Image 1 (spheres, rainbow, N blue to C red):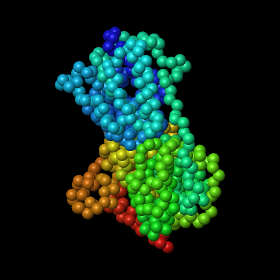
Image 2 (cartoon, helix red, strand yellow):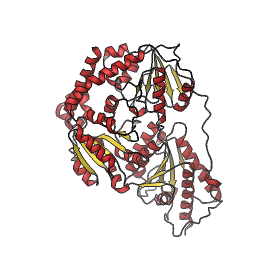
Image 3 (cartoon, rainbow, N blue to C red):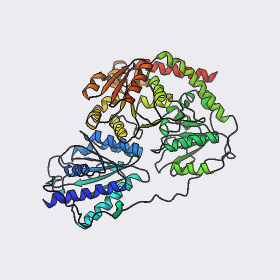
Image 4 (cartoon, rainbow, N blue to C red):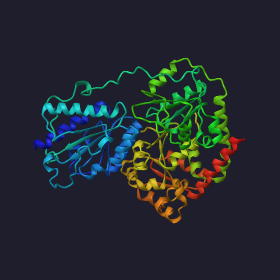
Length: 574
């Protein structure tokens, strides 16, 4: 056994041991030569679930999904060169969405850098400011001192990724050949190994919290609205916020990603309500309390930006700045759980005015008004969203693709007593890696997972479908197939004729049934709401991955949205 190979494997074994002791459950691999010691060390760690991927881009987004669903750091490794560069889109999304990842990039040793060696690029700080911390491990050396340092480094990487505002951490690992052991590693580790009783080498306590200021008191402000975006991986926070809003009788404008669109105070159709100028003016509040991320809805964002006479209070879970319209007058940073602990202990004087009733009457009027055009259209993209809301159990997770699907979920998803968990990649708002992210969510979730996406988003990450057969994962995929980018029909560029159609709408021409067959998935084409519901329930009760195709037409979808908007405005005006 060569000392160099043994050193690499001993150091990596110690680091992975510490990751697991800290709480890691999942790690993702992709093939290569230089990362052989990292891959083998992951596979040989029995307490980790190792997920094998063909390419680094899918591996990165799968890790992102698993970390998003579990709330714990997930490791992902790759070989050297452009393999590491292929992780960048997932790293960017993890940074923007506060998702904890630990990137283990294999690299050539110093003597092979910048001398023309193959598959070698400059990987030092490759991801720039998109990682919370970068460290060069150095060529592994299995002395007791270096192993102790490696264990401490692994704990530091884990706690850095997981604490404060979570995010990605990058460990670059130069490795010398030989890369494969010629004899088993010795069981005892030089220096004695990790701490007894399975404790991490170092633990990290959360910083003490003085508790955020409570929400504005009723005697201070008369008319208040709560606006809730993504609150993070703890699904209980949304339910608690919804219960508090109902108790205080404060209108709750909650993005489905918050988990708070439930209860009697939730206003589900605020997107449509706020498109009506008269209603937007009439429902202008004295106080806007934003909790968590800013929701997707553009009408909501525009409305917030125009509320120049209101107090704008932001309760932010971490230090990231979120004030695109420069309206915030008071910003409080701290865990949302601490905020809810504080306000739940306070004596709340419910607002006994008509303020909440005005919002809920508008919400009810819009819901009834839009039902007619939606029913007349049959199985449409909005109808698929409302059917998912109706049939998904509370134990399910709905992962929503960017572009048009997330906007339809924002606009049409109703307030439910027990809503399913709703997730999406809304950090950078891209369609990158959506399929792979959803499979990662499925890997780390106990209940069924449904992915809702368009055909362009599917084509963008079509290789992610390999996870169905290679990893044996179950996922229900609802494909809104309008043969191109339907969202672009809502933009002024849609009037540009053939240039728009070819270069902006970009028809995919995908035959979804052939895609399903190629990747070993089931396929159902639904042409009615009843058939869609039947296919959905069949897939949820089945064993494998199924693509449920909903064929729509882009221009018709644009007209349907216009009809819904007109119906909502007519109801509000009357």
